Image (cartoon, rainbow, N blue to C red; front, side, top):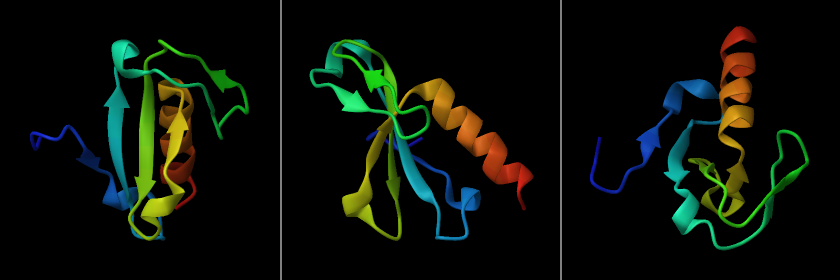
Length: 78
């Protein structure tokens, strides 16, 4: 894995894949809304940042479990 901590999940979407990185609890200093469950990701909560290769400006913060579920659904839909 590169030093920046991002993982290339290119095979997960027809749109060209994603870069995925964990956000540790001590790094989470802002509240976000998870697109997977539409619930808040609170300050201090470990989560995952997902950046589509096709549109880096559309990066989203997900609960890690919600993102894993999305990956399972995406892989099963092929």
